[in-house]
Image: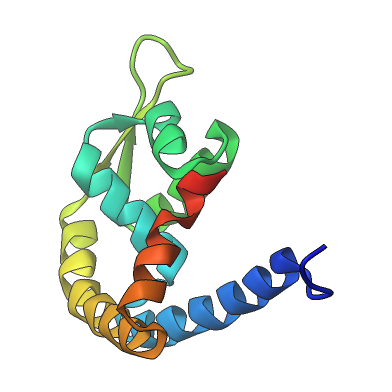
Length: 133
């Protein structure tokens, strides 16, 4: 073993702190970073099935469905059911598009702050980390 420090524990602690930084920055937009990420995935793929969004985000379909229903209750997404009830598709509402427009500069500023803190090499390593597994 190369270290007594658990990589998973270190990564989870960093994730909590990073999530808090994004959530604090996005607060004026009324959404958190998980919701922002989901809205952006929908925006890039709409209309998209819940299954497709789950594949993109590496989440199971039921988790995606629950999260999208929260966004729908906030008026940010619409869920359309086709002939096959198992394959609903999701689209942004105008309010969802406006929320992204409000949140995007807040998110971008946070990205820049985090990249400054991490440095370019560490930021690039962080981007490639999910593909290492």
